Length: 305
Image (cartoon, rainbow, N blue to C red):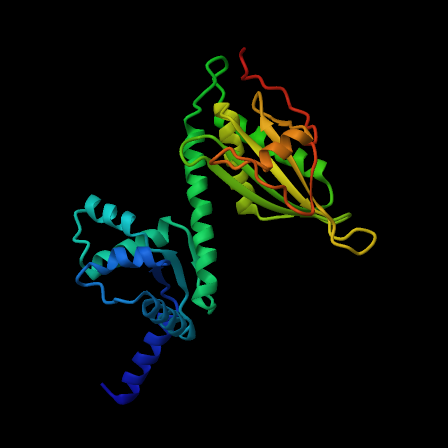
């Protein structure tokens, strides 16, 4: 083989490498790192050094034009994965197979050169969002069909949840809204968070993925008629004097598969009570506790008695 042909082959391989994506799964916290460090073939003994080496590798791949999908490495899930497939967990190829699996099925982000310490919290948030959606979807699937008419209760509940959220955002009007929906479906309860910004004459801004999770959690509460509620916290910017405006907190509880407005006193009690101990906690400075806004429920053909 001539040197020219060899150079051409190497150049072609480099170009081809840019078209073969990579996957990496990172041990985001010290506890997960320690769980893996007892494996003989795991080559690291310091979490900080491990993260630095991972970032160096990701940067090198990015500089070569290689697209890398980043996910979280879960030692507990990894152990189960190896047990299910009868793999030896103390082998690099087993870790590699698990990494490929979570890149295909788990929460992922694309590495674009960011510092790893800035990307990891986003990845943990994405993983939490997907876990909530998976849990809520499983709960919703248990609803089955209406015994009276045979309609898919999960589908009907999701449509109802979408209507409820739309009405709620319209009722809240302009401002930056932080919504939390909680549903008592297991331990811990289902919890979804949604941020929405509405300005006069402008299109409502909210993340599609967060909206999907929020509606799925809300639908799970509706379909199973499980106790739950919604709390909104709205910031409207500055008042006419230029001073920071006060935040307004409102609340709704579920009744007959629909959010029913709480009174201002009920909102205050719910917001200013420790959920674990039941003890009162001081109200926040700069926060007004207002009644929930009434929402008009659509007909519920699946409520029989």
